[in-house]
Structures are given as structure tokens and as C-alpha cells.
Amino acid sequence: MIIKATNLAKYYRSERALGQLNLTIDGPKIIGLLGNNGAGKTTLLRLLAGHFQQTSGELTINDITPFNHHTLTKEICLIMENDNFHGRFKVQDILKISSMFYPNWNHEYAERLRHLFRLKPKQKVKTLSKGMYSALGIIVGLASHAPITIFDEPYIGLDASSRSAFYDLLLESYQENPRLIILSTHLIDEVSRLFEEAVILKEGELLLHETVESLEKNHTLVSGPSETVDQITKGRNIIHSTTLLGKKSVVLYQDHVEASTEVSFQKVSLQELFVYLTNEGVTIDA
Ligand SMILES: Nc1ncnc2c1ncn2[C@@H]1O[C@H](COP(=O)(O)OP(=O)(O)OP(=O)(O)O)[C@@H](O)[C@H]1O
Image: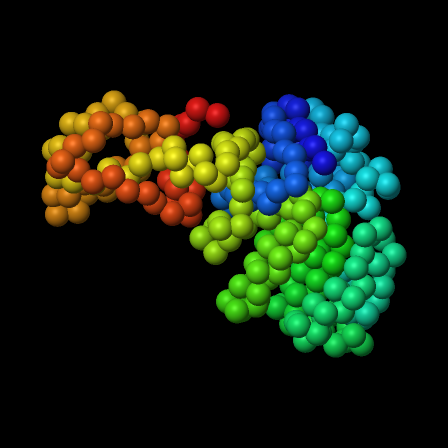
């Protein structure tokens, strides 16, 4: 599946959610969609799932526009933080409806997951706790085996051990059935081991789209005596800097400095890198 956005823009009345987005994603792989609150992640994912139409530009999946395309939308399963299922249905109804909608639905697997997350088939959606509701979304997303499976912060209310179980299941499901999985999350450190690529949106625009390997390679944390660090990093592409008791730490992105015995070179976590890259005023070459 190839997703292609060309000058994609979405406005809600005069509010710009996405503007002039150019992006190509192909699978199978697991992609992390990252961005601060209001960056446009959910808007992009809902456009992909065909929930509504863009204001301008183009969005295609395998050269087809998803909006109003019933065959294509069966190939895309979007699980959001909420509003996935109607409250008056029972768990078993949701699984039944999903099995009729998604052509690759795996009934045995869905039942296995339902047992694992301890959901009762006859319980009504509106009586589920937040964590149970999230678990139902996760079951539908995983059992759909949709060629494009999207989770938009699907873990609200899930405790740490259930989230960890979800990440393991996701990886297991991907290994057994490779497909394009997009995971939008703010809990980057928890899931970064799953991502092959990261797409970062900032204020409705693409900040970067890179493999996690190249993100790792492209940055350096330089630490040492303040004056030395200043000297060797002057004029470089600094995305973050801190000084404590005369020791300075500077994060360089898409730039490097010569090795020196006075300074040390390290890496930061993907979560930290994300925070620095999305800071006000930080610019990078796309
Ligand atoms: N239905 C709507 N009506 C009006 N404005 C909206 C609507 N949905 C989103 N927006 C606006 O569009 C922008 C992008 O929102 P979106 O939900 O896509 O961001 P997000 O990256 O998913 O944020 P978060 O991480 O907080 O979930 C925000 O400014 C938001 O206020």
C-alpha cells in the first residue's frame, strides 16, 4: 500500500489543521506518527480513513482517493482514542459488525484477544471502563488484519502492563502478518522500539519523515566544559542546549563536530530528540 499526500491541506472553517503536506509512505512497516497537541495527526489519519475530504491538495492510497471509496476503506482500520463504537452495542456486536466489515478479519484471534483483555461478550460498550474501551479498540484493530491498520493514541485508560501487552501483540501481529501499521502516540519512549520510521508533524506541516535508524545517526549530544563545547559547536545546527555547574550539553542535528578529548559524544532517546526537534524556533532540513 502506498500513501501519497500532495500539497494536502485541511481547514475546519478558518482553522488550519494541515497545510501543504507532502508525504509518501509505503509498507509493510510500522510507522510512528508524532507531533505536539494540535499538530494535525488525527486530521491526517481521518483523511486517510476516508472520514472526510481535504480542503485542497491530493491524498491517495494506491492511486485511489479514500473519501467515499467503500472498497478501499474496508482495507483501512482506524482505531481512535474514542468515538470508535456506539455505546448501545455489546462487545459481541462490535466484534460481529467488524467481522462483516473487514475482509481479513480473524475470528479466533479476536476471541483470543477478548479473553486476554477479559472483556465479557454481553457487556454494553457504554458500561466499559476507559481501559476496557481501549482494549476493545485494540482487539478490533489487530483482528482486522487490515492492510493499513492505524492506532491513534489507542491506550487511554490502559494500565502500564496492558499497554506493554498491546505493544508485544502489535509486534507479534506485524511479524505474522506484515502490513502498514501507523501508530500515533505521545508515549514515544514506550513504543519507539517498534518503529521503523517516524513522521513528525508540526503545526500542520511535515517536520520530518525519517527512519529511526537515521534519526539516531543524525544527532549527537556533545558534553564537556562550557567553553570548549561553545568553541567547537559555534555556528553548528544546535537544537538543544543546557548548562549545569560549568558543564555544557548541546544536541546537534544534521551536523557534526570533530572528536576532542575534552568532550564526550552520546545519543539521546527518541522522546528527547522529538521534544527538541519540535521546540519553537528549531529548524531542520526536510
Ligand atoms: N472538528 C474540528 N473542528 C474544528 N477544529 C478542529 C476539529 N478537529 C481538529 N481541529 C483543529 O485542527 C487542529 C489539528 O487537530 P488534530 O486533532 O488533527 O491534532 P492532533 O495532532 O491529533 O492533536 P492531539 O495530539 O492533541 O490529539 C487543531 O488546531 C484542532 O483544534
